[in-house]
Image 1: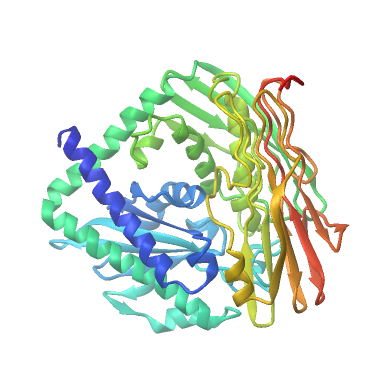
Image 2 (image 1 turned 90 degrees about the horizontal axis):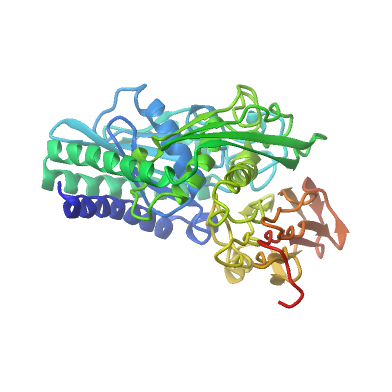
Length: 511
């Protein structure tokens, strides 16, 4: 393929991912998927290497890219098969993120895979919302090792039923899983049409060319980082189980156009659920370096080849079974981004921003017959090119907040306040973004779990810029810990105030 043909080929595959996402969004029933858009879709080659992805959730897609080869190369595949999984130690991220994988055959040959990953507010945890404070993986919900969901085009009701029977709300679960199945069926049809229009050998050679092109662009972008060793340490607030100020330490070694990322010095895995499987840490690393590549770089496996990653076994970023990991995917991945950016700041002072709010601000709640989950945005870190945005999701997620009208229609909740959190941004020549205030009033008793960060240690500024303000959690005006589970009564109010972004450059009163 020449350059124009390769670009068109890349966009055609990306369009398959986009259409899968549209089907998933429009056929799911839970607000978490259809309104918050907490899902991702991707295409992989026959070896499990990432080929294309839609602009969905970075932590989903980077972790799939890291782990997919191990999943697909350890089983025999047949046309019409579909595999479901969520086990973080076998290719997943955390239990609410359920992945569905389908092979694509043409002329009897396995030529690709389509996959989607969606966050389920109910994955069978003992507490509503399935984001509990936990110390073991099996306390966080149903653990699904790679399991056949469809075999040669036939749904395996026994396997499907075994999963559904362990959920709090099986009917809603069936609907959302069915939406994921539909997304893959659509992706398979569209990708097969593309393969047949090109013939298998040309499709396969196109995938190889696409990855080689991405690798060349990645090398070109990364060689702009000056050679050297760059070091940075940041900490997690706590794990909710009594361990505080848990370090994440990184050393970047830049040699020409290749980079080694070494997390030696990071704290050991902890009792609470902020641990990560290595695939989640890798997703955060890939995200940062992909941001430094030319904008036309295809989002495929080739773009990750110049970066190698090491994290000590049984550390916070390379945890071992049965460590709990629910918040690692959301909170710890955000801090990994911070430490990589902090390490790169001296090397690329005009490109690296200050720390953003640094938390997905997880809120899980529910009662006997309902489960609700959402994440909240905050302040973006400022950089040399401009100030940070207010009230946005940053880095490892780009989900939306549930619209107030939807939330109040389906759940016994009322939003009494939703506002920009003024004066939470870090000052500087370029000011950071402001955080968010969201206040829930409970219309019936509920159980609530909060998994939040940047409540005790502020998002840092750069180049003399000030730190962003720490976040706060309150119930009826009284402070709550960063990570906690509480029971609320009718009329109680939960207020979540998210952190602001760090500022960039020294602040002048003349501003």
